[in-house]
Image (tube, rainbow, N blue to C red; front, side):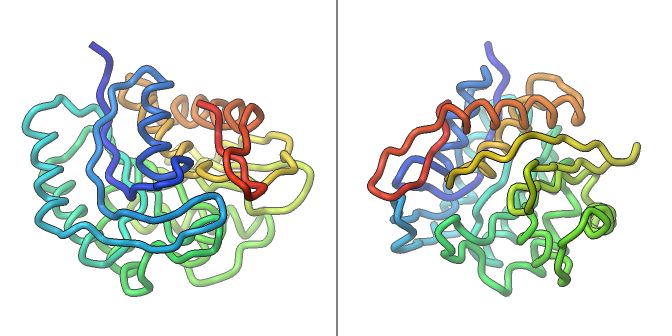
Length: 257
């Protein structure tokens, strides 16, 4: 039997991000994927047309159903949408204590659509992030969590350390929104900083953050250490992105899993 991982996130009707990307990633990494859908989006490669939060009672029911039956090796959270949903998921994770929790603080879609209410950020900081084994923000998400711009390598070091001070055991600060020839992802834990550097691909992509966090969760479920899980996940995303394709009318690539 393969290891098992759970994603708690939003559904992407375009198939490139969210629950759909998470389950594709779990399968590609040799992990049986479970899902609890927190929101339903109407979206395609051109953008997000609508977001419908799933009722709290049904989110709770989905989480209860999978935890009552499956030996879950890791949990990944993605788009949660509202303060009430973040609070619910944090309460469930504190109660069920999964072996590994990867928190992807999804706030804004690639198209620019807002995927997390302003009022939910404080709940995320106070309730869910302190439970995280790995927190995986991109640079704009880190800026929103910390309240200041992140422009330089020094800023990144400060941000990574301050994000860990919020309670997360480790932080993978993704560098895709930075500038320069290389993308530099920085992983912060009790041992210090590990940099992962790779050539920046000149293309617009969709679902990279979801895929990376899911790949980390999959590797943790398979028994890898957090550092090894992060290295393997970053390498996987780079391969999937390089082999990506353009399924819709917009010049937006999705990853090849």
